[in-house]
Image (cartoon, rainbow, N blue to C red; front, top):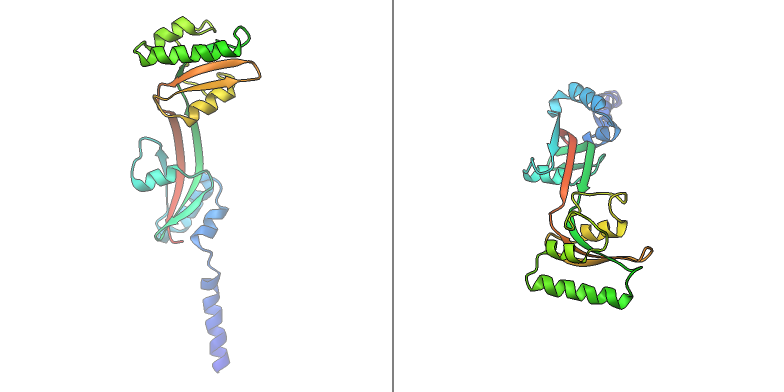
Length: 203
């Protein structure tokens, strides 16, 4: 009788023991359609699907979610989240003065860099300095407008702008082409990111 009772308890308990965790179930969900099926089948977990936008949704948990990548799963307390979809882009903007190393000696390039920075420190506007010294004939007073990608600006230029903050002045050299830039970062980065998140109670 004792063994029969034990067997019965094991049979009753086995479905409970076999129940996958929320994380395990989330790992199998790849699309919004699959997420919707999960929501319909697990109302007791209070699941919900929602969207967040960078710069618009500013609650602490929203900011944390917006730092995640597509496919990431994490738990806060007894609530689990999965980022089902994420689209992101980032654009940069700066102003520059271009010096052509094929027309200038290395010492002339360095001397012009010093002259330009000294004049700017003395109060000459960046736009006026660009008009006077840039050697690429740009008609934008040095403004790059918003850009992203090597088809718009050299990779070395973009990488340098990405590492600096608004207001910084710095040099960028492209040795392969003997190009030299004096750059002023004029805007904070323009970040666009939207995510779709699945949330449910449990871990």
